[in-house]
Image (cartoon, rainbow, N blue to C red; front, side, top):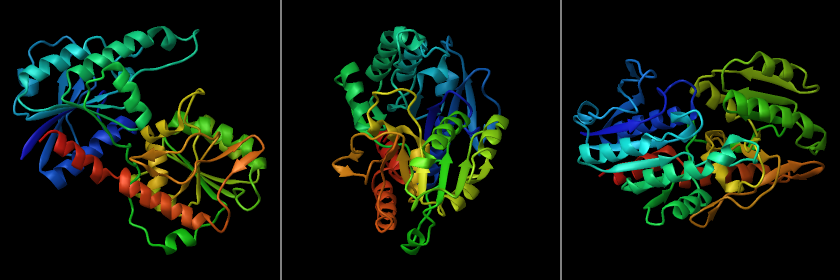
Length: 364
């Protein structure tokens, strides 16, 4: 059995997108590729074990990496700069990567969940972006290979370090990957919608969803809305209760199994993911909420249009959106077929077994 060190910003299993990604990856690597994971977490954030996987603590200034590297054959770093430092500038991380490269005999792979932040000039992200870019470039330089979730992200990484070996693999669903029959797409109500994700994404999406209800064609106008995920939020629950004409079911901290059972009954999913304009729509492939919709054949609907979402010239149907009084949605006759195409695209391009196979090959 091969032993893999997965470096993560927080202990997995706490309703955290990156943590869910790493934990699901660890499970599939163990079951499908005989690769056993140890999670390495910054000191102060580590405790015991999770789901049968050991947890090791490390400090940003730790120079003796012998105990961290002991018995490990390869390393996967989950890079999310704000996860390791509150302003997105973990200056110590490139040094740790370089030291681990020397201490470990095997491959070092970095999964870039994000590269750097952008924003208006009055925010700190605007002024810190150059430093964030330098840190990401140093990490890429010290990595044998890098993984990003979309073609636009691959282009950004090539601009930072043009010699990086880059693979593109969308983020998989955090709410399971059910096997569905054709009939399960044909029997769904077009009036049953869903919003899923963390607490912040749920609230932002719900507030924008309330503004577009009257713009939706009657054939798709929601009568039921499922809010799935995040932590319990009284503000969100109160706002959901005020959504006139729509029966809202709010299930925070829902189990993967229950969320999956509910998602396969929904026709559409509303997703207000981007906090500012100008981001190419294919970057949505970094969202586990988007992936969860696709994995269940739920048609994602956005608050704005954008370019086609494509991986290796394989294009997802859509994009579908409701922006002001303009709505671009499939016709009632097309909906079941579109939902099935989305589901099949996900399993060709984004499913968790594809990710674990790619990582297993990268560390071989």
